Image (cartoon, rainbow, N blue to C red; front, side, top):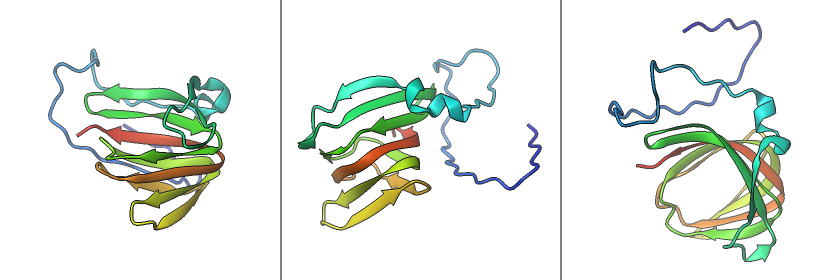
Length: 145
């Protein structure tokens, strides 16, 4: 491929090496997938409803998938204010926060404030909680291995 870069860019990347996926949902040649920023705006996301695991507030989620092949998916997610636990996360997730403010608290009680521009890794097996103060919107990569 070719990159014509005319001004400074910021790039967050995830490399996930996996064997060829002959049973994947990709037909034909493998191509680059580009998600214009407008596709990740709140108005373009599909509502998921209120989180059933919420223990604080009434957080409602929305999301959109850009890429979903084999164990790897990429998309956008947002959630309104509220809190919920995460027990034994089944996947690894890397995400970049587009907007909002939240706290991620580890099982040992250590907490990190997360805001727009932050990059976060939640490893498989992570236990903790989300406390969202201002609607959070992120672009994510999830690996199911």
